[in-house]
Amino acid sequence: MAAHTGFLLKRRGFLASIGALGASSVLPKVSLSATAGDRRLVVILLRGGMDGVDLVQPYGDPNFALLRPELALTPATGLTDLNGFFGLHPAASGLMPLWRAGHLSFAHAIASPYRGRVSHFDAQDVIETGNPVGSGSRTGWLNRALAVIPRTASRAAVDITTSVELIMTGGNKTDVWATQSDFPMAPDEIRSLQTLLQTDPVFDKAGAGMSGLDPLPQIVNSQARTAGVAELARLAGSLLAEDYRVASFSLAGWDTHRDQKRDFTESARLLSEAVLNLQAGMGEAAWQQTAVVAITEFGRTLRLNSTAGTDHGTASAALLAGGAIAGGRILCDWSGLAEGQLFDGRDLAPTRDIRELLAALLFQQFDITATNLNAKVFPGLGFEPSSLFIKMN
Image 1 (tube, helix red, strand yellow):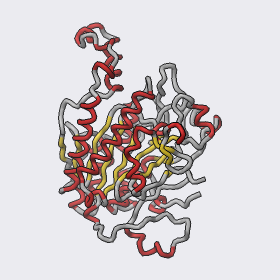
Image 2: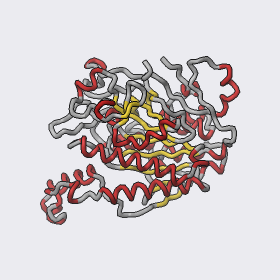
Image 3: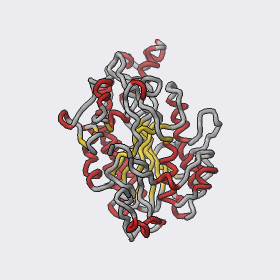
Image 4: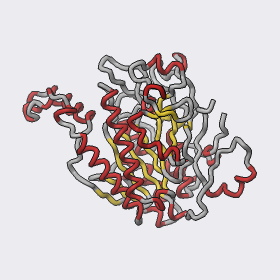
């Protein structure tokens, strides 16, 4: 089935062998003007647990609509078809020009080593440190990677935030740039605050009854959030167009415990805005040498809960964008959504470790050796360069 492909990314070092490859090869053309020092990497953290099965819907799996009759779409009902099996949520359809240009792919059914389905904090620690829960590590994998990038100029890193996030924390220099300190709260953040306020009358009084408000119409300013995301992403792009080669920033709003259809639509739209404004801020020359990856701490349950939302799950999807990406592909080993194929009987089953994808990007973009990736960036991962190019099934 066309849905089953591996991690397929561009790689300059394989140019010489392209002519000898068979029809099953998926190695794309690479610009001969690219130089090692031009390559860039952007990591976007999707905080809250992004539902990959909603963003990239497996409408070709007959069990999908049975599990999610309220959310499942098809190309006939608004889904944007990607490859005859998967389709893109309509709120993210603004990304389709990148797909058609070969600058957008998705890695599906992937997950970090976290299996707790309870704590956002523990799960986010795992994707930011690159180590399992309980490792005690307080340095980020992206910061550790800076130390083993062969070219000094390629180590220039920036975190687009008000303070350094864990993913960029460590002994290697990282700059911090903030677009604004009063970034509008996402719906899931507001609901978490409401829950806190409801449990304590003193806090509730201090919040002027905020716990009883419906967050979207009265608190969340959608236009302000859109403008904030656009500003943040354009800033990241403009910095990468100059001296920076590594950047990260976060997008909240993915904890869709309630009314997923409404809240997920808003978050997916903002993700699209972020990627497109990142590209615009960067300019075409820098974009051609850039790999963008958007990752999340865990996915969501396949069945909706009693409040029309989804609970914490396991596997999700990662977005890959940029001129350095072999675009127009769904990268996954799809295990299916039949009852016996679900993880714990409720989630999309993980088939690949998300750290493999991240290691592949570091290997591709900055020539970090497999030895350094496995010993210093993702200790014990066992990454092999051959895993970049898995033959299509």
